[in-house]
Length: 62
Image (cartoon, rainbow, N blue to C red; front, top):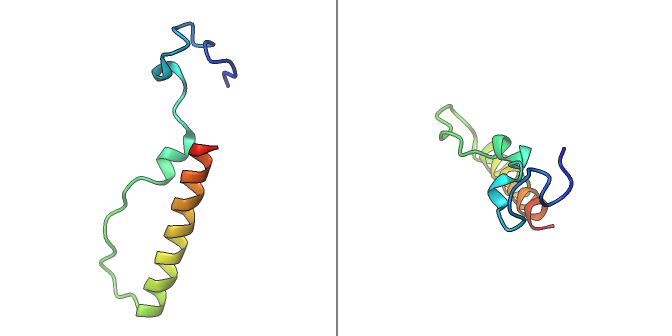
């Protein structure tokens, strides 16, 4: 993995030359759940989704 800001050989201000974080593939928008899910299960799913989204945002910012 490249560790310097210009390791891609371009302009140091050009962030498009940097690799895209691998977490993007795990947090893409998923289709809505169409199976029979109880309210308790849906609450749990929403809590997990919120925690994963928060972790993703924290990872990008820091």
